[in-house]
Image (cartoon, helix red, strand yellow):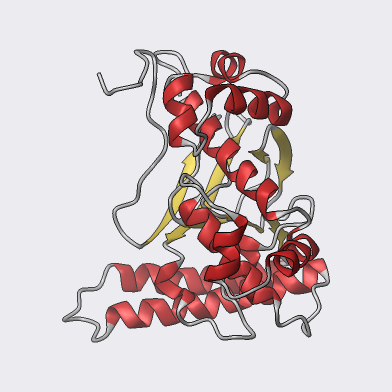
Length: 296
């Protein structure tokens, strides 16, 4: 048995081998997908009615032509409760570094994944025409996925450019939907900091470290971070660690093991912080959420 892992644990944290992956799925019947997250960022285009999405324990009804946007710390569950219900969707995963180098000083391709001060920030409802446009774009990516380098010269670059084009459309809709001002160019520096936190929250991250790394006074950093993200850097780091801890606990890892792997260096501090954020102890959360043998 792997160190720190309980007998009844079931692995559902999925690690994608590739930096880019895309699928079209068409399934039917009641689906109770487990709560999960990915190392990569995820875009899901829902093409059926009667779907549900659960994020942070809160359930949302999802209608046809809805785009769902998840970063690497979003614990979520998606499915249908209808016994005969359709579940048609495109699902796309990518490593943020795969396209972020195409961002400019004034335009971040990852903005919609990082800028989340809104309720339901991961949900973007589309018109029929907008959904059709995304379907065509995703179909082109599917076609490219199945071609060899010999059949398509520059396949990898072509995929990156098509993905970047699609992300520009997603971010344009996201900005319009949430009324984000175009003149705030300094926001991209905060996105860089958020991205850094997503990659390193399991390690110690000090405010002074962020200040030196991103060439910004720590007091200005805190003020600007709060303006953009609606919370402080310290609280954001804690939220990322709590998300990781939820994943590990529901996957069957012990509280002690989870404490260290989620970036906490003190068990009592971890338990106290977890209960304050989640409303129950780590052990209580695990007992409530760990899947039993045979459950999916």
